[in-house]
Image (cartoon, rainbow, N blue to C red; front, side, top):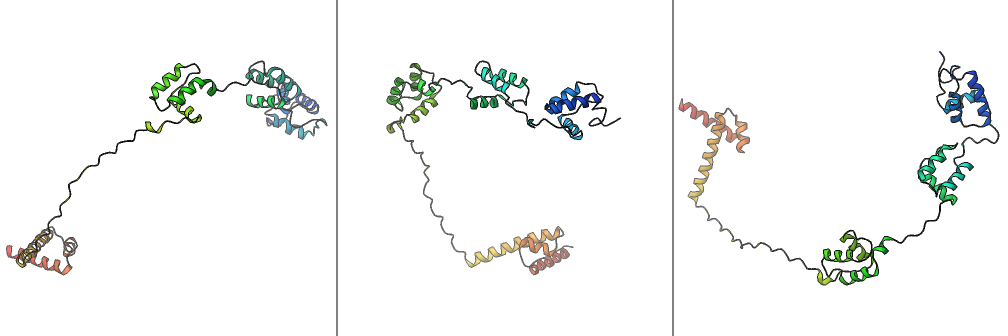
Length: 271
């Protein structure tokens, strides 16, 4: 079995003859592939690129006036665009144009751009803007006189009752006021009342502690030493060494060793 891309099973003698005729006539490679696949063959022609490769192998020659890239806007397509673009929907125009020979037009936007450049689009009548229709002279006069002087809900209801296009919301009214230079009177801006600040009673300074007497100082030192000794004895009872006691109580190591000796002596006397 030969390769399905370029083998003889794909390009049969009938297909080769048709390829030569269509190629030399200037037909597009994609259309040639479709016509070759309409002829009998064991494998279909895979793509237009396969047609080009086979034509290159056979050294087939295009006509002298042939262009490699087919025209996107042929005369037939331009005539169709000029006659239908203003009469039927754009989608139908695009469908009819793409039905003619040539590369496909991608979308409606590309088609309308071509129609505009060619001068095929009919001139659209100029429409009055919605701002003009909404803000007639009567509404503008009422807005200038009452903006900022009445409540927003009442202002909107009165404006909506006047002739003209519907006003969507109070936001539309504010936008129009900015656009036409209508400002709210400054007297309507009520300043916010300041928040009351909590009052605190003046703090009285704490009295300075009375100095300790020598007896009180000695008693406090003895109390601190007793607390330190008690804590150290508890740690020695929990099998802590002198280094751990020194680090925990933040005392020199020699003091921790003295406390450890006192703890051992106490245990001997108790035994």
